[in-house]
Image (cartoon, rainbow over all chains, first blue to last red; front, side, top):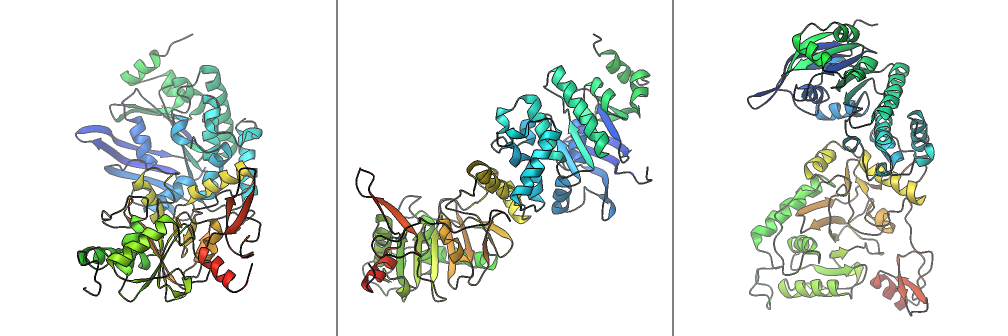
Length: 258
Length: 284
């Protein structure tokens, strides 16, 4: 462990007019750590994630990222080309709906290769080899490299989206409900895959979900949000087994036991 | 301007002086930022969109009474579009017209660059249907402009990747994307990719007008124009592998002409002036 956090969020606030998207959010994310953000729909967790990832401009606060060349830099005030560069090298964003994160009219190989080409890869053969390698890493048969994502099942599309994001070896992954909309057996496989990739590549991740089982499996630490504010933070097991805030208690007790 | 007679009802070259000035501003800006699409207030022209309204406006803004105009359509001087635009400017500007590439000072073209090398005294005006090379990759205009500003062209490369993945080679055969002066990626209008190398370090000024889309862009003389490609699939300027059936030229772009309904066909130069000049000098 180093003593510099990979990502440091300070007093982040986003408002939609008079309404609060999220406010007073501060936390540090350490290298190799997976942080789960849970809360009900409308609690501001997606707003927070989009502000961190640069998709939304926050109204106040800082999002400091430990860049490889300049150390901690505020990504909110950095220039657009720099932020885009981060977005396709050190950062990755996995959308809930693979349709938002994939180019549906482009083959699987093209989808995986896009980030490589965006950072300057110009050798077709090598791009293709890398794409094949990544398809097999996410358990997609490499012979399907020229198929379009529409011909894939929901679970495969999600795995393809993960391959497309991880191909440039990012250090930080933002995930927005990565298992949403998948049936439970497919969810389980995807979680298994994600857990393996996160551990093997030493990734840090911010994982937004309303599914407590997902954070139990993936997240080291947990942040519970309600009405745009963080109401409780702690180690995942600690928060889930011994929730202190009334809302967290409600959330934990609402999970169906089978 | 009153140097001409039949067009008395019109200003010289049809457009009013203020409009021509506005278009010239856009042209100058385009020349200053090679490959950048400059918006301009495109006017209604007495012809339908898609018939070269952008090219006609650029030509009108460039013409002087001393100019000699040549108009080609797919390389030919004698097709409807070329004949009517040439007739239009003869009437409203009273300028001399020619079919000889070497004699022209302004050449308006649709879908070809003449085979005869252009000189520093010439302006080549392209008619452009869709100026945005990223249009079918990214539908949002706000986003394509940002991508141009940031030179964020990975997506264009993805398109070429898809070509190779599907066809084994880059199958884009016209409107092949080029990078101008090391920054902007530009749609060279639907010229065959055979013509792309002619844009590179051309002595002539190259102007592009898109009337419906209201954009003008330009390549100044002696500017690098590089066709995008992959290291292991380099760009090739392809053409039909035949000599011209009329003049025997092996270095010109050919049209395939179906001659009967029993599969008969011939390949002839698409540049009619080039072909005719060769025939006159004894090639056949």
